[in-house]
Length: 623
Image (cartoon, helix red, strand yellow):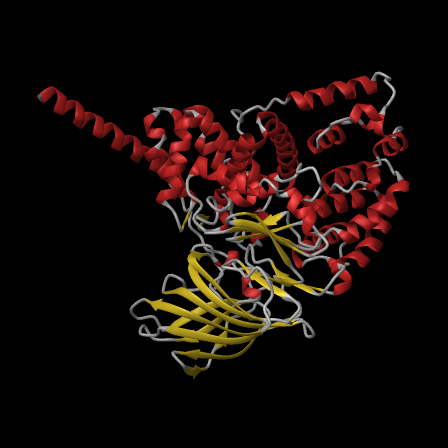
C-alpha cells in the first residue's frame, strides 16, 4: 500500500513536471491586440440591437446600433472601432452625450470615444455608412444581371466600416436586427433568416449565440430559397437557383457527416447564400448562412470541398475562435483538417489525396516565395503589429496549420486525435482562445499520454519557426501519378489526344497545368486549347491555371477570354496570381493596366486592395 502511494506521488510529480516543462518551453508573449482601439478589458458589450435602412440610391446604410454593456468598476468611457462612418449622435442610457474621436489610422480607422460611468447599461450610436465603406459592396442591376445587390464582408477588421463595434475576435456578443430595404429585395444576415419576401419590406433577425464582430454579415438582393434538407438550403438569384440545387444536393449528408466526426452542429440551420461573382473570397463562414462564390458552381460537384470548409468553420472558427489575428491559424488550420475529413467520408480517400497533394505542393511554393521576402510570415503564430491582418490570410494559416494537425494525428492515431478534438470543441465552445491556450490544452489533454511526442511532432517548430518542418506528412495520390505518366508520354513525343482527358477531375487538370514543363507547353498551346477548350472553361479553377500558362507562353489568342474572366470574376484567389503573372511579363503589362482600369469598379475593396499593392510594387503608383 505504501509502495503504491509512493508510485502515485511520483507519477503525479512527473506529470506536473512535464506540464510545467512544456509551459516553460512554449510560454511567450502570445496575446497582443494590435488591431483595435477598443477598451474591451474595461467594458464588455454583450448584446447588439441593430436597426438599419438600406438606401440603394445613395449607397449607404443608415440607422443605429445600440449596445448592452457591462462596465468594470471605475470605467469612464467606452471606445468603439469605426472606419469611415458618419456619426450623427450618441446616447448613453437614453441621454444624448457628446462623443470624440481618436486619431485616424489608415488601417484601423478611428476610436469612437463615448463617456460612460460604471453604472451605464446601454450605449446607442446613430450613424450612416460612407459610399466607400470597405466592408460593403453595392452592385447595380447591370453588374448582377438582375436587380441591385449589396453584401458585406467583415473579416478581418472591416465590420467597423458598417457597424460601430469593438472589432476584435476576442469579444463575442449576441444580436437582434431590423433591416428595411426595397420591397422587391430580400435581406439575409448571419442569424435567423426569412425564406421569402414580405409586403412590409421590414425584416427581423436574431442571433442568440455569441459571435465575434467579423461574423456580422448582411446581404440584400433579388433572392429565392430552395430547401436541401430539413435544416439546410440555398439562397441564390433566380437565374442560378436550379444549378445551385444540383451542385449542393449533398449538403444535408455533409452536415450529418460532420456531426458524426466532431459532434452536434450547434447553430440551428445551415444555409448557403450564393453571391454575385464579385465576392472576393471562395466562401465566408457567417453563422447559419455561409456566403459562397458562384465560381464553385461547375455542374459536377468537383469544387464543393469549399462548402465542406465553410461548414467545418461551424466548429473551428465560429464555435472556437482565434482570440487575435496573430492566432489566425487556429481558425483555418483546424478547418482545412476538418474539411479534409468530411470530404474523405463523403467522396473517398482518393479524392482527399488529390486535394492534399495539390495543397502541399502549393504550400511548398508559397513558403519558397515568402522565405525570400517575409520569412517570419511562414510561422503559424504571426506578428501582425502595425499591419493589416489580411496579410496573414495565406496558405500558411490554412495548409501549414492543416499539415501540423495531420502530423499530430499520425503521431497519436486518428481515433485518439478525434476524441481529443471533440473534447477541445466542447471545452472551448463559444470562446475565443489564443495559441498558448491551445498548446497548453494539447499538452495536458493529449500529448502527456505519449511521452516525448511533443518533441517528435515538433510542436515548437511547427508553430514558432519559419518554413516547413522536416516531419511534414508526405502525400501520395494514384490519380495524380497517372497525370505524371501522361506528362512523361507527351514529353517523349506521344501525340496529344482528347481521349487522354476522359473522366478527369478538376484536380487532375490543375496538377497537369502546374507540372507541365515549359519546354512542352510553349510549343503546344494551340493544340491544348483546341482539344480542351480551356480558354472558355466554365470552371474558374481550371481557367485560372490555364490563363497563367497563356501569359507565360504569350498565347495571345486567349487574351479576350482572359479579359472577360478578370472583369467577371472578383475572387481574390484567382485575381492575385493572374495579375502577378501579367506584371511579371513585360509584354502583358499594358494589358494588365487596361483590364484593371475597366474591372476594378466591379471588385470588392478586399480584392482591389490586393491588386493595388501588386500594381504599386510594379509601377510605383496606384491605378
